[in-house]
Image 1: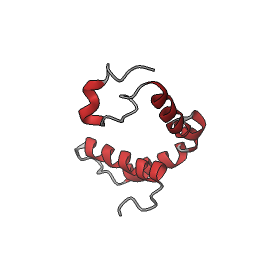
Image 2: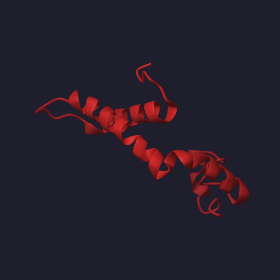
Image 3: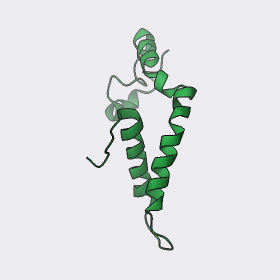
Length: 93
């Protein structure tokens, strides 16, 4: 796989060792290492917890009042990552 040169503009953002910037055997090996959590079965197992996190957060949103949605969505995203990827049981900490 050769994408490193084409994606080189992302190095400042992602770092030189990002999967998007490495090629050949190193890319293949790292991709194999990273792929299992993103397999459809693994992702499907996370659907319930993700829905629960979203519902719990949305339940606290203001009713009949304008508010900034983007920060709230960022909070949901961060909590999903902390709980499902990292395994944190208390994202507030």
